[in-house]
Image (cartoon, rainbow, N blue to C red; front, side, top):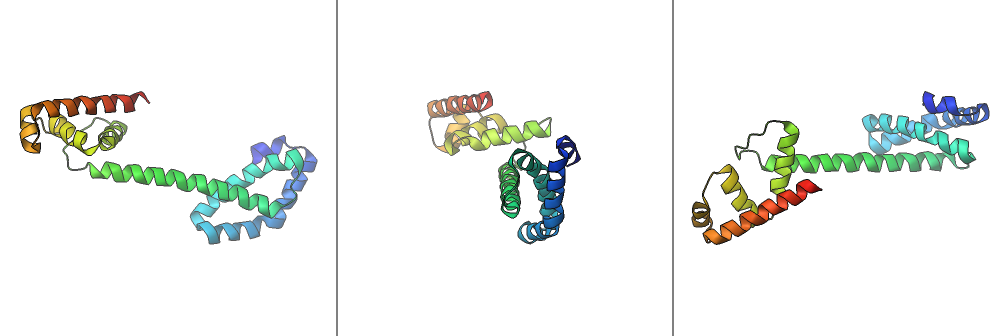
Length: 167
């Protein structure tokens, strides 16, 4: 808060300090009730950092509403990021036990995401070929499809992976 606070004129600083002094206890209690103590602290700090520019630009007519709106938007961003990370972790967990060894953790996550993004028929062929070391004839026999179909699916799987990597 200090960096943004230093750039404000004295009148704006006094006004923001007044808002802080009037509403900080109420705001902290409200965030703790709604988001829990740990998330509340992060949201509280970030919200106060973001209130400054509103105060400088036009003053704050409804400080409680502004504080709650900013905190709500920050919480939505926070939880969306957590959801993405949790979804990725679940997808990575689905590939455990395949015996895939990758040199770096980020490479491992990327490879697992690529494989999981394949449609199931393509994924089956890809995994049996690349991780199982089977030939097209062996894969075809195991899946009950022709070697030509195995070749077609493998081509599609590789194209899909290449397209995902270009993104």
